[in-house]
Amino acid sequence: MTTDTPILEIKGLTMNFGGIRALDNLDLQIRKGEIVALIGPNGAGKTTFFNCLTGIYKPSAGELLLTPPGQTTRRLNGLKPNRVTQQGLARTFQNIRLFPNMTVLENVMIGRHCRTRAKVLGAIFRNKKTVQEEKEIVALAFKILEKIGLADMVNEFAKNLPYGAQRRLEIARALATEPNILLLDEPAAGMNPQETAELDNLITEIRDDGLSILLIEHDMKLVMSLSDHIFVVDYGKKIAEGSPDQIRNNPAVIKAYLGEDV
Ligand SMILES: Nc1ncnc2c1ncn2[C@@H]1O[C@H](COP(=O)(O)OP(=O)(O)OP(=O)(O)O)[C@@H](O)[C@H]1O
Ligand SMILES: [Mg+2]
Image (cartoon, rainbow, N blue to C red; front, top):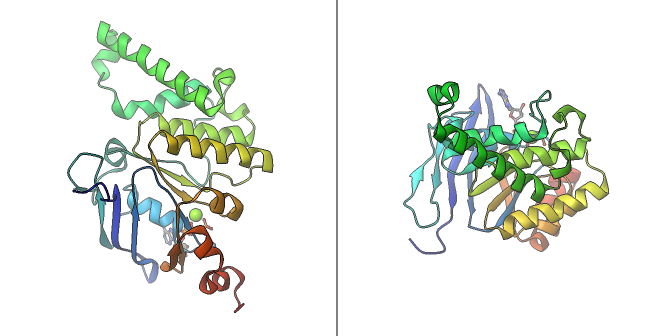
């Protein structure tokens, strides 16, 4: 294994829904500390890609290979979503999925659940270990909320947060699972320019902490500003990949977006 081994390597990913081929033989790699974007028109298959990767859908074909830093390669194929999270992949959803009637702090603490040891008995009898673990979870949640800029809202119900803050809270919850790879599905959707600029900084900070980020996003300014590498899909097929400059000037990409030869 060299330092150049991708932390995540997808080979030949294919997903059929009845007669629809939503993903067609897709290859994608991401390395440690990279921000990689997956872009393409509506219905291109981007969310399906995340759903295959995180165990929500079972791919029709393909290999999902994870090589955490300093560890051996393992297959993610066939793992349940919670197992995928334990392997170090965390995601946010295109449609916000928070617990609306729980507080900001509780929403983040739930993200942590996948890595805690205390089980049902511990939770009922609240032994010393459980109490200690609970304290650690609260401390971690606070640390993440500070980073995300929501520390002054810990006791608000999630449903009362402004939209942009709800999207950031989803990222906080994903970070609470301590991932190596963060998958973001349209994190800037519905944000105003100020919120999008803050999101740009936040994603950069998360990357600087050593995470790899796979970003689905329609806001091209954000994509071009953040990405080290961009994959473009259309009708489930990869039509281009490269640096932001290469993608910006790629005729096939322009055609896919504008629907005409340029
Ligand atoms: N569970 C499903 N059953 C049947 N078809 C599906 C299913 N999920 C997705 N599809 C189809 O797969 C294709 C890709 O959808 P997907 O949601 O992945 O696109 P997308 O690139 O995320 O689009 P958008 O930018 O609008 O979010 C679409 O034709 C969609 O209708
Ligand atoms: Mg989508």
